[in-house]
Length: 330
Image (cartoon, rainbow, N blue to C red; front, side):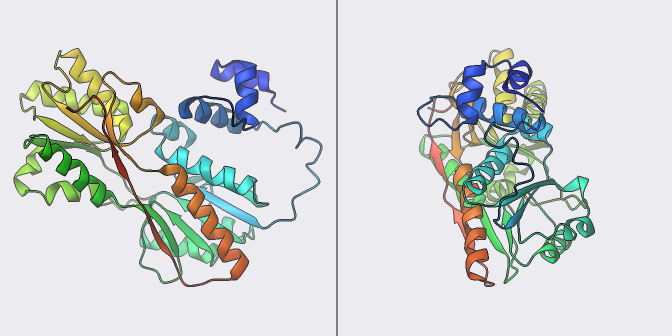
């Protein structure tokens, strides 16, 4: 069984730091990025705190809940948006007497999930209508996080990307920037359906002439770097860029810095997510805070309510976003 020493060797953090993070010491001031790295390593190594050792045969009497996620641990570390949501769900469930079963969906089939006799399911990520109906067949108490469905019985927790994008574009217009490009990622469901991105749709609604200034890759720093490098080499640099995630924006900033293009004097950058690292980039990123912790907690709360009351009519909850203004814009 893994020990704190093993986590220290894997992450490079001290035993004291790891111990305080794993024990959820609220007085301990540590970045979200450090906390996420330690908790992810603990999960990968199957670490169990002393309080839980020797109790393997003593299961909780609470209900069994499935937490289904579509990003692998490696993908979550390169773009921590979904990792932040997932950890918030785990923390809530661990404190509310739920037996939480974590399921990486590509590793399981719907028939296999049905055999687990889950009382409720929280599914984090993007799913096609067919996949959603498959998830619903596992349990009637289904909560989707970051995915929308009109289904009358399925709860949804989501951020309004269209409204967030409009706020960012309005802000850029207010500071006198008209020529804006978009750098974003392309996502697809597990069964191959290409998804429409609310950020890109909102961007296009501000003028079809901007379609040529849309550059798409994946939601990673490497992709952001490659896309911005291509833009610079093509000589079609705009006055500002709206970037689909902070992870991508970190790569965008690297490419701009390498080509000695000043941010924000020459190019302004606005991104999405407000991950912990966004305040430490050079310059610090202006970004949309997606409130991922609130998204995860809200999903778990909704499931707890459904299991307690038997509610079958869905609730569609949109979590508000806010623009955090930093040094990558004037």
